[in-house]
Image (tube, rainbow, N blue to C red; front, side):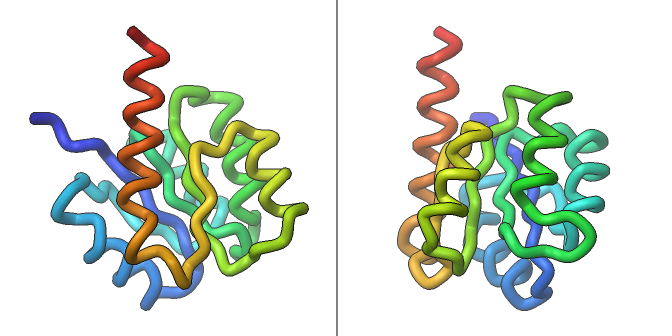
Length: 127
């Protein structure tokens, strides 16, 4: 069975390592990057199924990076993993078609489910 390919983006090395460890049993984690510019570059090169990204990152935030990526690769699903619970960020994420919005404190319980849900929705849309 093909494992979904996931690209991670967060400026905190410990969070990248923790999320990578959390996801590696269920998904193929293709890379983990530290800023929005690297996220854009890696997504164009690796073409993952799902991108799990923080919002607040240096050089380019996660929402701007997602907008840039979405213009070229519209089929990639985005899960925003963030500490920002403000509705403004959530609306911005939804405006670019975010498949999920998970708060970091709940990641252990909710992140895998959000990725699986995003991929199930994508499979149903294409059939």
